[in-house]
Amino acid sequence: GGLLRYKIDYKRFAHEAALQALITSYVKAWEPAVLCFRHFYIANRVQLQQFNAKVWVDMDDDPFEILATRYQHRWMLRRWAEHAYKMSFLKRFYRSHYQNTTLIFAKAPLPFWADMAPYVIPNIVPEPHFNKEVLAGAAPAIAFIGSMSYPPNIEAVDFLLHRVWPLVLAHIPNAQLLLVGKEMSQQQQQAYSTYPQVQVVGEVPNMIAIYTQVQLTIAPMFSGSGTNIKIIESFAFKTPCVTTSFGLSGLELLFQTISQHLVANTASHLAERVIALLGNPTLLAQVSTIGYQQYTAYHTVAAMEKSIGHLRANDTQS
Image (cartoon, rainbow, N blue to C red; front, side, top):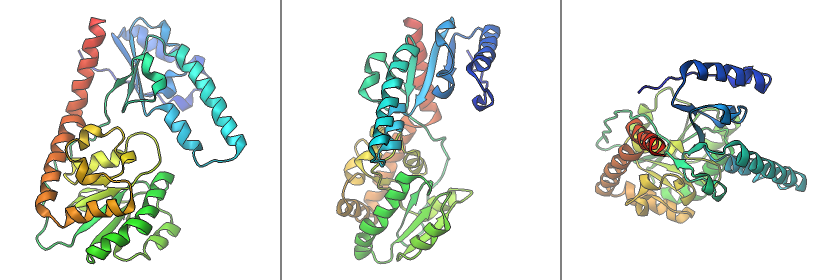
């Protein structure tokens, strides 16, 4: 009836035997009906077939997608050979290691997993209970939010500043762009601050101040792996996010019925989405309301609890 959580720092264990002995001792003591591994880093190191319990493994992001992302900018033949070897080894390993195990992903995984009956539970952002108020006469403003040391985010910011932002300013000269995120180097700060109407904010302790200032966020993502949590967060703060089809991946339910106002794949079309929403407060309010409703339906703690309940019921019946 309850959830018993035990956190293990897997890096402390030099070999699998010690880690497995610890987990096995707790499982025997508690005799859980369901044994859930929060991350495959630990599950990969434990013999799962020994347990007399349903075993769930939270894969979160598809490990093959993560691996591919690490190699996508590495063009040397040796790097690609290394990548191919790792992919081949992991496919054989996962086939045997995760038999009769429920694998949980944050979004639909690659076709490799299809016959292993993967279960999708979307990522969540705890509800911030934020009452967004747009100040009368406030300058139109948008924000890019994300870790500034992450290569896909660096790529997105460069594209935004070079290709999209000049088009927005041509139509809305008083618009402001806020660049928000941790791990921004001094070189990045200096480079970004040379662009017109750009505020280099960096890391902030509380996102409320940012979402109070901006009407929109933008995430022109073209690479990376997993689900863009920053996009979910934006909707949680009742602030629509303009993004690409790549950024939309795993968030289709969040964008349903409003994607035509928020999703585009070229600089000109992304700029058009921003200009249209900033220039039409009524449309902006409608998109914001619908987006927040879809966030509460699919990406909150309550939504995750509902999904876990369905999975538990399916396990009981099987």
